[in-house]
Amino acid sequence: MKKHAYVEHRPRSTDKNTPTLHHVVIVEHKEVKQTATQKEAADWALAQDYIVHVARERHLQDRDQPAHWRSYP
Image (cartoon, rainbow, N blue to C red; front, side):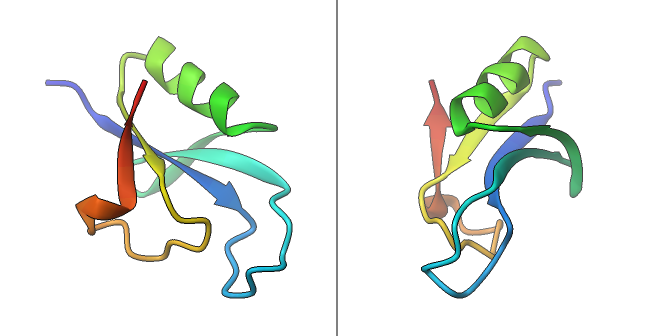
């Protein structure tokens, strides 16, 4: 069974003016990869055979909400 990977920006912040410094791939609640762009993170996760979900909202804290994710590609 394939595992799910979630792509999020960093740093996490409630301040919408905080710039994104990098993106991470999260698998089973652990950051497993850090990249410069969201696309690089998502493409890496696909290459590792994960089911990939990319955050729709920049300041997402609740990963359990399906509406906050979009499938990739």
